[in-house]
Length: 356
Ligand SMILES: Cc1ncc(C[n+]2csc(CCOP(=O)(O)OP(=O)(O)O)c2C)c(N)n1
Ligand SMILES: [Mg+2]
Image 1: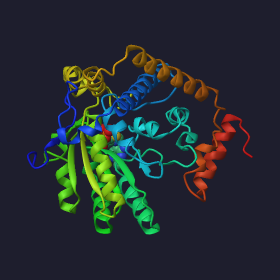
Image 2 (image 1 turned 90 degrees about the vertical axis):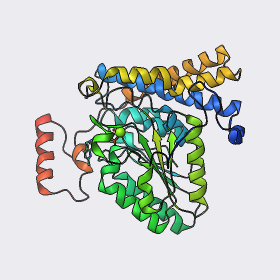
Image 3 (image 1 turned 60 degrees about the horizontal axis):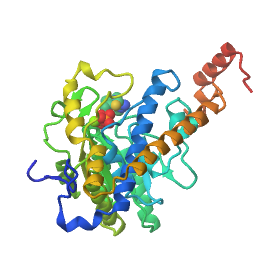
């Protein structure tokens, strides 16, 4: 099956273009834009870990190493499409236009952080694994029923493909030809469980075969390959030809979340080797250099701009009014059950807050 689904690559790790036919994709503007977005989200990711360590945000799920998968996919979308992320996909949502301040508020446990900018259809991150997959299949089906050309993309991990929701979502989308892209970032671990301990299949792409869904395996550290294959899948969706499953093979360098210690379950050298050889941002830097597009001032400016934008978002997040503790109970049920009403009253009483 690995031979049936070879890993698709357009840019090799040295930054050399690997596909003559698709050479027109390699433009200075696109390469620079990929670089800028990837640097921006990596800077955000590192800042967020530092904020968590200082107690300024709560538990945080880092994505460093997966920037090409997130930027390449998000940049293929049009503003009218739906984006269903997990807790690790805020690199994609910020590239798509999510507010950095709201992403930080989310990681501070604030429900306000779930609100996307006006007009953008970004769902709150799916924390229960794979639940967003049938949601995306359904939202896409609704767009089809309404006669639009809009599509939906569901982000999920390798671990999610062992859940029932993955199979139900794929089956639904296949039967009803929903315009949806199932975008799996295979970072090869579900917390501490490596891929070979949770599935017998060697690829995730092959799982699409059972549902007659066109499926492709791409180098998830090659932003051009990800961009190209998601764009192709979107064209399929918009022209009425249904869903696509994309397996982007990648790696997270760090911990599952800031509450995890990966040294307990894997050799840290492995991440170092991947960083040295296959880093997605180094690859784009190599490409910029190979084409003479690596002006020092421009590259420095990109990094500076990212730092300034993120510092501003942190300030905005920290100026946000403190939460009303009653909100904890407000969105659990439409009509709150008596035990929750009692708990809410009790909490507010203990805190001495106003229960009105
Ligand atoms: C239904 C459900 N079961 C278990 C968990 C606990 N859990 C949180 S993340 C995770 C691993 C998911 O791995 P994967 O889908 O590969 O995504 P990744 O975290 O690697 O991005 C698990 C089991 C959960 N959140 N939801
Ligand atoms: Mg995973």
